[in-house]
Image (cartoon, rainbow over all chains, first blue to last red; front, side):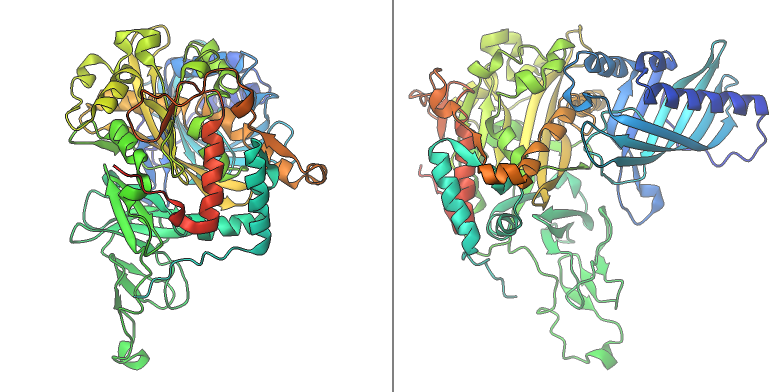
Length: 178
Length: 462
């Protein structure tokens, strides 16, 4: 599934049950990733997942900033699985020990789509990351444009577009999930 | 316009440092101090980045008149523009009036750059074409030629790769590249339509010194089996531990290097041409290559290399999905951008062949970023391993200890490292990745260039 432009701000009322379910989902994701429970997080990803971090540039027009044909990451679920396998080898040096992270999720907006089982969700994410034996920390600020599939087992992440606030990353790598 | 070639007089402390480095290199050692030293860094900016041919952009980033990108030569911001006559200009991004940066964006399209401060306006070839309140401010007394944006005096391109030199005089680009031009031809000159960038460069800041990236890509096959072994474990790349011995090391002189990989010898004929699928490989036009190049691209092509000072590349087959046969061959060029003595930015471009269809290009781009990018399964580990050297350079104990790094494989490795007498290409070919010879050679070139600027370039005969 292709990632589409971020939806306009959802002003139409959304039923509180849906909003609660989406909030719970995003909070659970953040908690699992902060606690190093990536395998459990993997179960929350739809098989059709597309996870993209586009390249952002400083441009005169806002509309040109996000280069949607260009990316730092363009992962399907296969790629995410490979990353997790690599982290599990015990030889993925940059995440040994794992970064200590705190993902703060907020400004959640939910919007229904034409497909009754799919909702658009945008959220702000601020990741505090302290890596290895660093005496400093990195902040990774971003906004995420997601689509979630609503299933009998609960929401599943179908697409995620991570719009980084920075054009040049201050953290040395994106070895963690956003 | 007057152009000044940077002075070649070195700070006295730096001169002493370089003497020490040279002596240490004779013993296959390297003093750690050069990885975090303010005076050395300043000298690098003048003598290396102020004189050498430095990569600034690829022509596919500037397809139309008016297109521009903002880039760096050392720590200097430059605007690379395509003017109305199709020419490429490399302009200093400082307004001549008060130094305000006339271009505040990474890329765009414009015929003019107007300074936001007082409104001095420059055309995209650098000419000063407008000053507000001209009659009251200057009448006709302002010489618009004298007050143009400073321009890199020499700009040239090879296979679409645009290089600029801030020195008015010195070796030509062809003289400077020497055997590296021959190597580039194998990497990117195999089709009349050439290669194109898959997207703009992605940038990430590392707390490491720019030389470490350049040294690593010049020939460090030794680290691959340890730092990147996890990629072998998950089936992404075979033989990482064992391959160091059989890689070929090329030293083209002038600080340019490549590593060749014997794909056909190790994996069989299907791995010819880096493992490109036969349909793609059939599109390569080898008619412009000499016999040595033809043998290399088919059997043991360049997979990684460095062009002095700070441009490196890597080409490698990566399975589109592990366990399936289909390979995407990735091509990344990257620049180790100096930011400060112990800090750099990595600028990473993925390249694809212009003739490749959308799916092939996307596969190569995805696989390229998956392995070599800010989230790359290889690259993430490099980004942190390289942080050690600048810290060690600032360590009080290591300074008292006069810590030196070991490049001792150059005399300790029992593997045959003699230059191959049958090799007919430029420079030297060694039959193995052991020996750390390319890395030692890189630092010797660094010493020479700090002392003499790009005059340290040796022009190769024939």
